[in-house]
Image 1 (cartoon, rainbow, N blue to C red):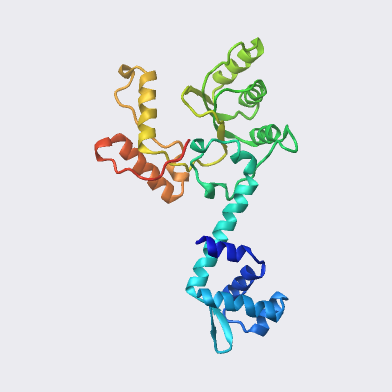
Image 2 (spheres, one colour):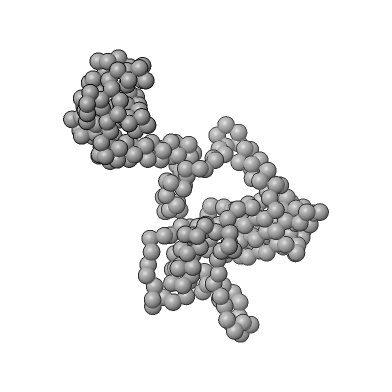
Length: 283
């Protein structure tokens, strides 16, 4: 939407309320709007006159109705406000994240629950511990694991209710680790339900999915790069064929994500026939 329209709608709380009322109730008279919004008739007349001049509303048989233009502009305004609220809610994360490391888009933040360390330094760690304790399946990338994480995961993986975990790490053992760290990490890596992979070229930011579905779609170029990296780690003579597959069983994915992942895999396996898409999300 244009800057002028945005300034107009944000300049008064009455203006969005008028558009909301007309959208919800259809045609309304000046009297009905006055009673519904508890706004003076003078203010309503001025507001409706301005909106009529913009082509957003029109008088009809003594009442006012929303035009298609007005509805479209109001929808754009609502979308802007939703994104603004998401950005403000996630500000402490976004202002410390380089732009080239966050390409998921603002809409990905709509349902995010942000746990910030600003008021409680231990809050993020406490939340992660809580999630891990409740999860039965974890998929996680991290540049490295802290000792508390290694202890927790090792206890879960070797306990009465074994954890199913796939860990992708930038390095297996940080420099100068303690004997306890090494022992706990080796126990974790040896647990039956745990797979550990080393990927030194991953991002600096840790991320993971607990009992969830990975609906992120990688670009064909990224998939080829990872396939080539894997092939370089495993002698090709050990396998006749290597397959690229999704990180989540397709059965559990939404249909559109299933189709997008299959298309990306097909393009990655056949570069000559690739049709590049705009869907690129960091893993």
